Image 1 (cartoon, rainbow, N blue to C red):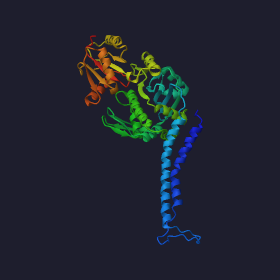
Image 2: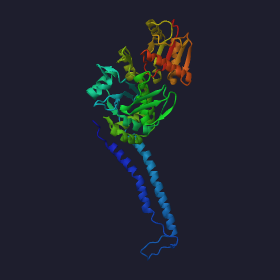
Image 3: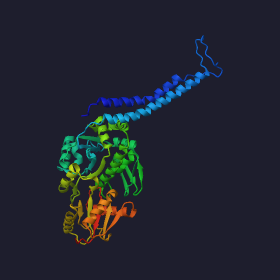
Image 4: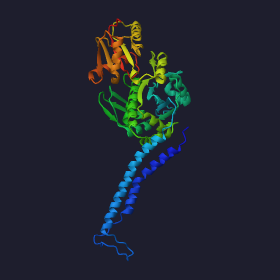
Length: 457
């Protein structure tokens, strides 16, 4: 149920309407204050006895000055109104909200044969006291109680989906937003364009949904709403739906950055434009309150719900990693820079679970924690790399990553790869593709991809 509009919201709405009337008001004022100018032969005096007033040239000059000042004042008031309304909105919507505040974002696919699927499932957790905003992407093909999670809303309703989210993350959502393709396109067109760089060929046609996707790898594209929608919906690459999640997170991050550069008045106008195309239980006052919290130097992080892929390709929750994931998401006081996702891949001749057991033991003893994931299997890259390597996926965390590697493996020398070098970028995605071919799908973003050769520690 939508919240009833507060007096402050009504005031804001009225103010917006008032400002929109300024332009026709100026035109009307100009028409009234600027009648047809008298001919050059008009005398430079006023005949008091005449019922028709004739203006002197001095009066005409004064009149023009008055007109110019009036129009200038009107424009000044309009500009001032925007500034004052911005400050006023920030003041009016400083109300307290629950902390942490959890919200569910669903992207709704087109309705096919009276069935609606949730194409995008993202949970946002805003801890405004600590200044953290965490987004958790949930694979839409995740199996829950024998069904894919993207069918839960259509089959059982929002309350059931809330319960499932609570069981997964330990927090029940406080609100929800469901948007369709039209809302997404409007949002991007208003905030964009959004720049993306595909990492592989993307081509697909679906005539039933009027969908055509055609992007080249390594080429920067500045996309409008229609184009960006096609980009994030693409599922035919080597990692399927999981790569699609990564594109969604990248786009969400860029859209959020664009939105936070706007003022509350602009956000209000944007909300009005997309409101016919969304379903939500959040009213405009609550949205502006949350917006004011987000503007206050919030650190944003993105993660994916821990999962495993079965032999038949089905996706299930990784219960083992879920416990620590929930602790870090809600209750952790760890600084953002220490939230690092370490992925270790075995390139040694020891193709055994012994590799994983030994490596985890070394890390736990030397640095106090274990890598997020260790791939002990032979995934077909050992012949392509010699020695030890680390690919830095999050440059801002490089110093911390290298510090951990020095502590965990003091006798090893790692070749450091960074994405500002095209050859390193290509090698990184070659490794990910090899993992995907072996049905190994790491959590993203991968902060550090580590290759260990000849493990003897």
